[in-house]
Image 1 (cartoon, rainbow, N blue to C red):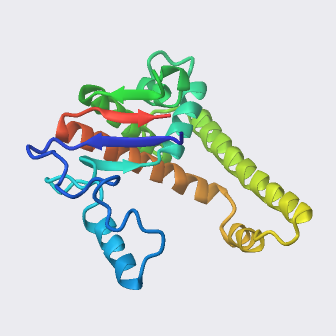
Image 2: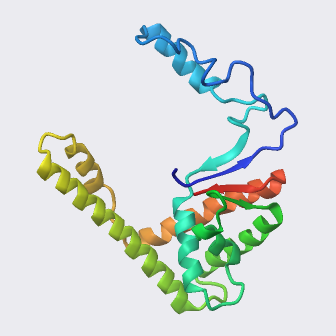
Length: 218
């Protein structure tokens, strides 16, 4: 499965809403061809009721998203600061697949508080403040940039190979989208890391606020 992060809500009415079950309550689920009106009914059900809980949180989750850059950042920090005793301990655990039992890692609220301190320390360093060694921050930026550029070039190469083998395959729009998107550069690398840190902080605040663990799935 793909990487995923979520925090469950702590609402007193955290129970599935009547009529929200995907397998039993989806309108016209046994029909092969739907009229325009029926398709509209399905779309409205998916928007308003699918997997909804009585408290208003879909699937009883207060926040959820794919944490790919967060996990990657944790993996880099774990390697770069390996010799620094206890530094970025939570972040390093998030980036280490060996810490996931049955593909799941739970960050409890007290640990989320420590993670938040780690996040803020990196944010300060990227802003030119704090006490982190400059050479290690530069190495973090360099490795994050290199990995991002490598992934981009690999995707371009694969699309070229598909186009060569299957000239009529619908890869032209994909190639155009990739070409139009911005290639990694030092400025965009800092922005991407800061976005990952902001998202990680949102998970921490959600975990601390609800008293529920952050659930990270590998």
